[in-house]
Length: 116
Image 1 (tube, one colour):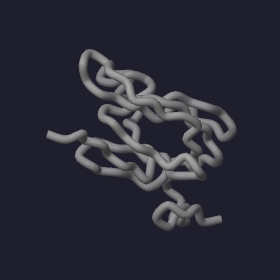
Image 2: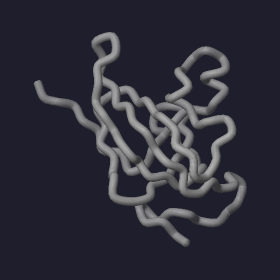
Image 3: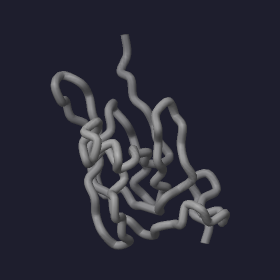
C-alpha cells in the first residue's frame, strides 16, 4: 500500500455546464465568465501536486484525461490537500494571467513553457 499522488502540469477543470446541471461544484469547473487578472478557487479529487513557480495552462476536461487546448494561462497561488467525506481532494486558488480564444490555432504553451 502506498500514497497515491498525481503530478499535474496543467489545471484541468470541467465545463461550467456541469455545475449548472448540478453534476459538479462550481470550483470544479472553468468559470463561466473567466477574466484575466481575477482569482478563482478550484477543487480536484485526489492528492495532486502543481507547479507553483510560473504560468501553466488551464484546460477543460471531460474526464479520462480528455483535455482541450488551453483556455487560459494561470498561476496557482495555493494548493492544499484535504478530506471531503473521507476522500482526498486538492483545493486551492489560481490567478488568470491571460484568457485565450479556444478557436485560435496559435500555440500558447510548449509543454510547461509559455509561448509569447
